[in-house]
Length: 114
Length: 114
Image 1 (cartoon, rainbow over the protein chains, first blue to last red):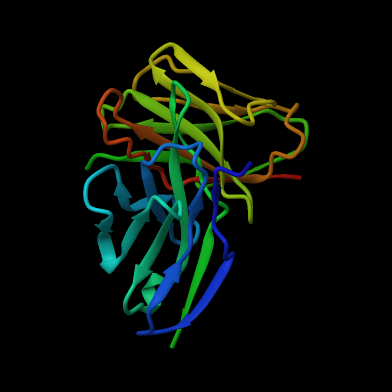
Image 2: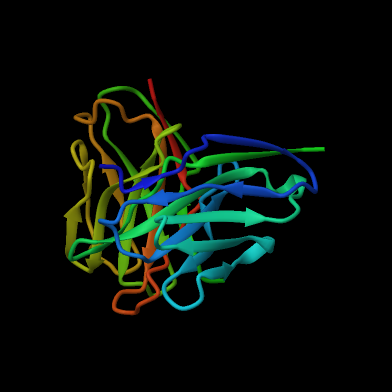
């Protein structure tokens, strides 16, 4: 079974519009959850993470995500996107198999147009 | 500035040749990782190392080899046995033993084998 599912491979949106990138994880992984961003031809940068505490997590660049245990979801949101947010976004739960391994989703490409 | 460097950024090789990708970090991290990224497949773990002189296979280790002789360095060799080596390779590192679990990524090396 898939440990993590990013339902949308691509999300087109206009500048200043809100956006939600969806992520669902299986109950077999831990509840440590991460979102990373990758700009073209670059490495990954951490946007935000949920380890414990408040289920609403704020990250860099105005992004936030909400951990929902009952729906096993960790959707990423931004109320108003910029052209510069065009990038690929990866959801990654931590799998505890004796070694804490990040399991990456297939990614969602956010395309922001003017 | 602390960080992870990968060189070169672009690498071209002929089929049948071994090639070594460099990864160096000055973050004083114990753990280091190699991932392979293909379009639409997210990141897949090739090898990881939690301490010097020790490393473990990840999910797709066949056709790859690594060494960890120094804390700062974790080179990856793509051997001629790797059937489809053309990909984007990412190196990462993390602190071991602290419950942050965040991985820091290098800028990547794009390998093209023809």
